[in-house]
Image (tube, rainbow, N blue to C red; front, side):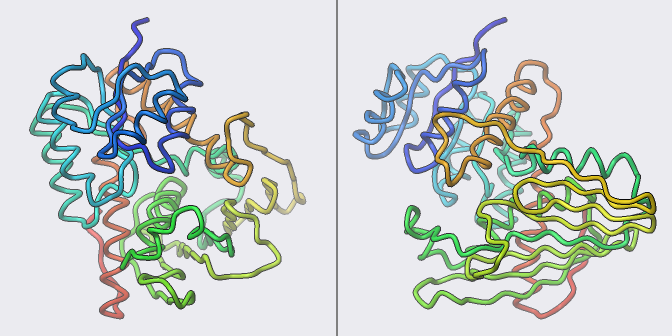
Length: 341
């Protein structure tokens, strides 16, 4: 099977883990890294034995023979870089969140469709092993018709210490983490028909919101609430775990701390621990997240090889972006927002 050659654009905090995850899979090889500060690209390339470094994307695309490009830069540069790569006829993978607005995200999807190239978003959260098991259990329909669910990402992790630029974002936790958690809501329960959102800023030295609650109404009339916080000191503070409680008319399903999945019906409760795989290169604080990058890559690579749509294609992720940016609209208007998805 042919090895697909790719280039990485960006050499920041997450790029190292992107590369480490790609190395776990047979059939993909990084040939070049491009970063506007070339010395950062050189340091990363030396660590991962990547042969070429650049500080200009067009120069890299002129010189390298590539099968796809992986973009791991800050969100403001995503639209420009995606369109640059798509114009060369190359498949594009882009880090989340896809864009800084729904209009920009739509333009990116349209540009790749117009160029006839696959466009995929690296939305890895849904690939966490405990969440995959929760989805599988939900699909077994043991708890009957779902009428309510709660998804919690609530902790006091000092995220601003290793990513200080997050302090300066005018839109923070919904765009940064909501893109993950709202995508999980879609993964588990499908498309919402409306949403309502409220936010708060607790840390005094940041620009954007660090607390948010988004309430989704599903066509089935199920209620799904997503709660986000980097300002909560709680007993169940297990960064970066996501907790889920699903209530059905025949029972309930829970993903709790330390990866425990519990299914409760009239027959009792069945519990099992679904721990993620461990990789030596993973930061222990982010091990759950880093393991999901490998599985996300696996799905993206399969899509590039076979032409089958990935779970997180640009067109699919556009629906997540609608939830993200309609949430900000709801907060600003203090109103329930109908959705087109």
